[in-house]
Every structure is written in C-alpha cells, then in structure tokens.
Image (cartoon, rainbow, N blue to C red; front, top):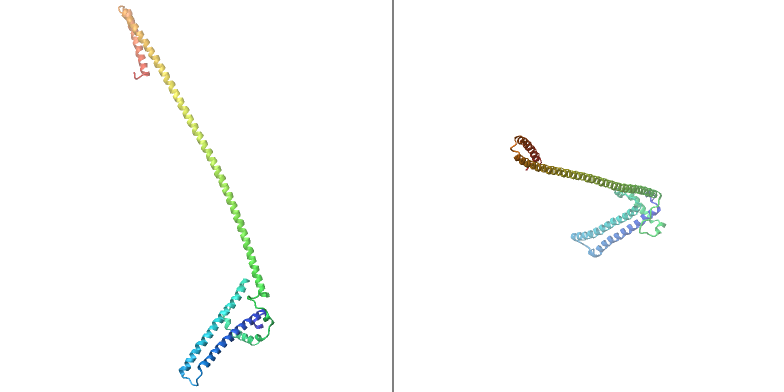
Length: 298
C-alpha cells in the first residue's frame, strides 16, 4: 500500500473495510446463485420448453436478480456514507475540514491498484489486524497532521487571546463611560443645585426690593395724608378766625349805627361817622371776599 501513502494503522483500517465489503459481496453473490439454483430446481424439470415459458422464467429471474443487485448497491452506498460520517466526525474534533474529489472514484489506475492490493496484500497476515476494533477512529498522531492541528490550535488560542484582550478593552471602555456618565450626572446635579440657589437668592432679593418699594410708597402715602390733614386743620383754624373777625366787625357796626343815631343831628359827627361807616363797609367787603375764598359754598 506504499503507493497510497497509508501508514500501518490506516492500512489496517482499509483492510478491515475491504473484508467487510467482501463478505457483503460474497453473501449477495450467494443469494443471486441461490436464485438461479431455485429456478433450475423448480422450473427446469422438463426437457423441452416453449418460447413463452423460457421468456417467463427469464423475466422472473431478472426481477429477482435486479432486486438483489439494487439492494446491495443501495446498502453499499449507505455503508460508504456511514464510513465518511465517522471520518468527518473525527476530523471535526480537531477543527479540520476534509474535502473529497468525486472524480477520483472513477480513476481506473487507482481502481486497478486497489484490485491488485486485494489480490496480494489483502491475503497477507497482518499483526495489526489482531487489534481490538474500536467504535471510533484512533486519534491522529502523525507528524504532518499533528503539525496542522498544532497550528490550528495555536491560531485558535491566539484568536481567543485577541478576543479576550478586546473584551477587556471593551470592559474598560464601558467602565470608563459609566464613570464619565456618573461624573456628568453629579456635575449636572451640582449645576442645578447652584442655579436653584441663585434663583432663590434672586427671588428673595426681588421680593425684598418689592417690600422696600411698598414700604416707601406706604410711608409717602402716610406723609401725604398727614400733610393733607395739617393743611385742612390750618384752613379750619383760618376759617374760625375769619368768622370771629366777622362777628366782631358786625358788633362794631351795630355799635356804630347806634352811635350814628345818637349823633345824627351833629353834622360833623355825621360826616365822620359816615366816613367810618364807609370804611367799615369796605372792610366788611374785604372780609367777605376773604371769607368767600375760604368758604366758597357760603
């Protein structure tokens, strides 16, 4: 099997599979032979047969043989799929991706090599065939494959380390962002607190200014009321004084009239009295004018 490049272990696995395939093939060939023997024993009892009878026998034999061959081919295909499943499953454990070339399955040269191997090496005793059959393929430990596996594992470790580093970086950035958010929220609260205190102080100052303005207006109003009260008091006093003067003048006028009556016969006295009366009348008019200014309604 040197032409196939197999090691001893893989050569043993190939021999086991070929033995399994050969046993299945031999069993199916025996089944086909039994079909022919059954036909011979059951139908070929007469010496002569008609064409229709021969055709009927051959058609029946064809159906039986066709069924047997088709069953064997289907079973062989399914068996090959199960073998490939084992290989692919074992490869996936080591993160390998196997590829197949379907065209090589019809390579006549390789098929002839397999046939030659079946004739020669297949019959050669092999100690490795005595090993216990395992349900799974043995791990791959050869140099080339191990090197590929080691490279793949190293690459995966490196990628894993990069992802871990990236994760740590993202965690650091996330923590930094959270810290910045916390600091921003605290700063915002402090600013809102300072603005609130400033607004309260401004409102308090404005209220104080308004209170001072109201107090000043109230004081001015009270002063104005006091001034008006004092002015009204002065006017009342002046009015009372004017009334007293008027009464006194009227009394003097009455006295003057009485004296005028007594001295009416005296010409000089009469003239003097008249002059005095005229003066008094003028004074009275003046007083009345003054009185009208203080009491216009009267």
